[in-house]
Length: 311
Image (tube, rainbow, N blue to C red; front, side, top):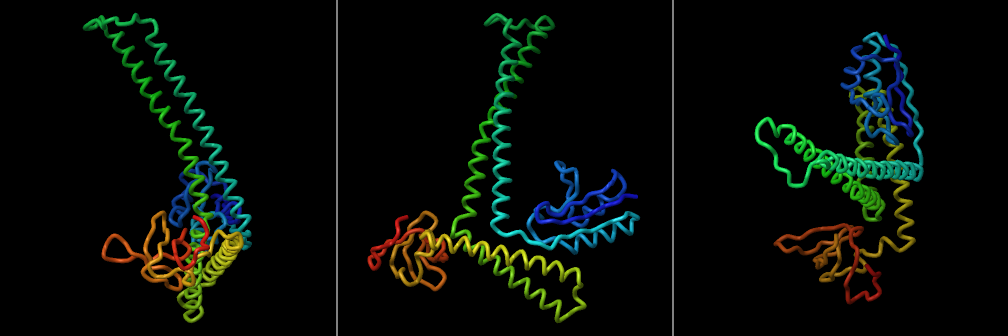
């Protein structure tokens, strides 16, 4: 029987370590509780568990079933939560490592494509230009050589196309990272996290009112999720406050936007129908209206407030 350790840390996430063997049944048990095999680490673990609250219920249930199967299981769960700026810096570092790997992969694929092109040319280099292929068995070797040359050239072209996609993937990664750092996206993320926090508080209240519906393990999981949410909300609010202080967010509200003004939302100019406390109602090309939060307003054309920031 195997000796297994299930651990969770903010840096590494939830991982399973031990002297398990193929066919001993541990993999089937772990998969039932959401564990996935990571080929790069040669370990089982929970996906996207780094810098998140541990799934204590799944960890404890997996450990219980592994013990019932005869294995020796130890569980280590760290309760600390890393600060939001540390989490963002670590995520940026991982993305940069990924981009460096993609750039290296692109260089490797380019070299492979050039080698395949050279190999294709070398196969038919000794053949005179325009030499016809003899019919029947006499031309069999000639036809096979031409087919191999063509197949090699096609593989070279496919490899070159894959290499050409690497810069676009790198640029797309940078755009996605920059999008997450935008003040309007940060404001929407705060609202979503606050809603998750309220939902979590309701579930914790249910555990207090109806103890038979939950357990101490479930309460520990909820408390861990709450700590993480509170830290993420506080970190995003600090980022948003910095953007407001720098003048990159918070210019527009019900106080300076009026009916029939033009606002730019998601790259389009829309006419304001009504300015609300948290959003602006704008016209569309159809019979209905759309509503956007003030964090999405990028520019304003208004005769009442001439001193509006540039887009």
